[in-house]
Image (cartoon, rainbow, N blue to C red; front, side):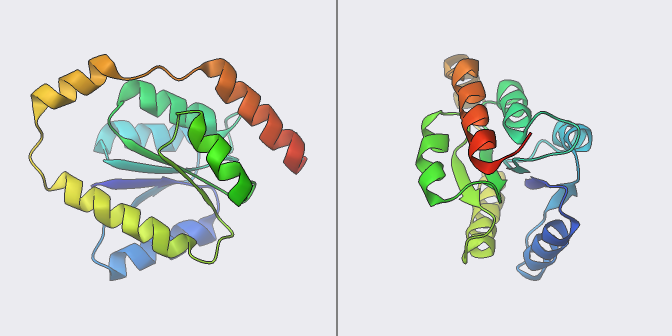
Length: 161
């Protein structure tokens, strides 16, 4: 397994899973924080795509921070209906995620399928354990204050409690 989608929107999970399957790609899905973290630990994917507004958590940013702490080399994508193109740069600048993608974009499915295909290609490459160990030692810590400030701004801008 090389890609994990954590999103409580069953329609999006089903649609993306079906599109991935048709493209010959494997995608495991989870609907909440606990299930997502458990599946991450079991499957060790190369890519995690997580919704921002997840049930059972303050926000998807916390889940992604925990995943980044566990495996600094995993590619992380924040997917959300609560962000727009102007938020993407700010979100990516915090350094927690590799990419932020608005759910409501016209090319969202294509972007995600390309990311899943890339994860598949990376999963087929033999792991260089020396480089992996270096990446864990040299992983930059994510400033939790910046993550919380970003979360507060996103919630306020979108009227999320």
